[in-house]
Image (cartoon, rainbow, N blue to C red; front, top):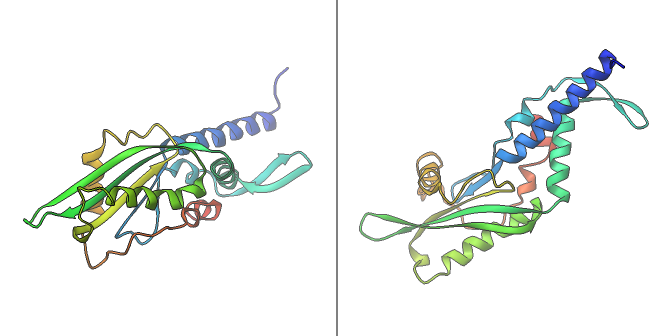
Length: 199
């Protein structure tokens, strides 16, 4: 039995939204540093490219007018807010050696069973632990940075040089005039349905 044009269109729409959600999940990561104004969200372009125009979508109790992007944004955020994932992280502390040189102490790893909201407190805790190591003199710390992702598609351990350059060159992490203290920041203020709809 051939599918009706409207049913085929709906199936194609559903596949496109599901594919965009999976792609965004695989490629997304969050970044923050001592010179960031707020948490930066990367890799969610497949969600923000979805159709923003409202269309009629069939639901259990009838139909509703919404957009592909809103459906995708709500699905992605619902997954990150309700399901625990092993979040990868990469952290770096930049230290003045006193001889016109900066050394970087880098650590990467994975924290199991993590919700999106847990990342807010997890990252400053990891950085604090790194700064407390004997090799770091806190009085000479020039800045810090972190990246976190719920996906294992991002290979942080083999990307030290790239990530280091990203923060030093593009995010100006060594700029002391823009530096702010290490603190917990609510990542859900920067990654949520509203932000994805506005992108």
